[in-house]
Image 1: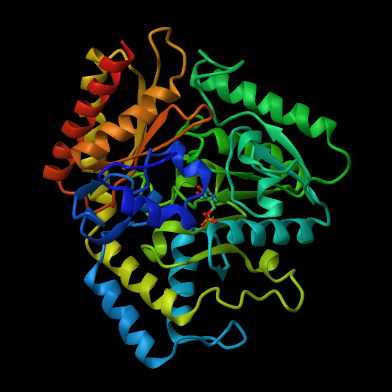
Image 2: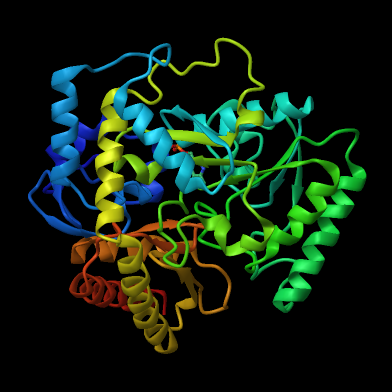
Length: 436
Ligand code: PLP
């Protein structure tokens, strides 16, 4: 395309870094120069209210002074030690996360991303159980590496069908579509357990683990009913199969009612393995896996991530976590999340383009449909564009790409929640009008 528009020079600059898929998000990329609180600015000086938090990564706020200070001070002391040597912030952060995880006798292994955390979890589970057979959920997303694409339940997000793992998929993530639509919670759980039992009946030999997101993130902020994983765990426990909870999107109080997504299924008891990333570093490359010592210690020598848990990222994450806990942002998430959910549900009554508004805390999905009631990815793309014009950044996802994903930083104020809801409703209105 020959771009001669007003932003042509900027767009030419983006050519080398713009993968083709980015065009499914925005017609033209957005180059961010800086941020503050819940706002970011682009290279042309436009300000946006950020309702996607860098894909749920900016957990507390953009350019949080405490994080900037901790990182700068740490950079002045020492940048790197490798996991051969411990660093003070790494030790402190591990202690804190082990305690917060709810897993008894927990140990933490730091990585640089969610993908790497899930890779490490798979390595632990398959080594501990001496099997490369794992269970994953349909419609799931767990990362970009060779093993994590092998447990990603939506084939369109898996660039390869080859995998070092044998993966068996079970139902439970998507409520609204498929054979289990229109069931009550209890019936849905019973049907999913039956499916799990069937799948296990087909498995050959030992199954290492079930890995699942408590709320599917890329899958469109969709989840089974509370208690689903408790019911699953009873089946898994009978066979010694480990439960890995992928908390990359759902951790750190984002869901409002709970600090971790798995706690909505608390009668299941804690998971065997928990993975985290995204929010904890507030944008620093930080992830990790938490497991009972017995599971963590089954790995042999050389299980090292050169940059995982670096002094810089752990110092920044410590400051970020302190800010989150000291200011009880989880409580703020509950309040502002409920406000947003209410506003969007009210608007949905008069906007035919909105099929469903669902969510928990500041993790809200808005499912868009066409006049025929079928999923409308075009309406989602149009809403993103209109919202951008209005100064609001939102995300999208879902199997058909028709779900708007709303996930602002957890420090969102009530006024910002009201403002963002208003802008989003206007964008939805414009997208709906265009779709007829
Ligand atoms: N797990 C979940 C649930 C995710 O949403 C993602 C990323 O979106 C990942 C894992 C992979 O994390 P990363 O992109 O940090 O590798």
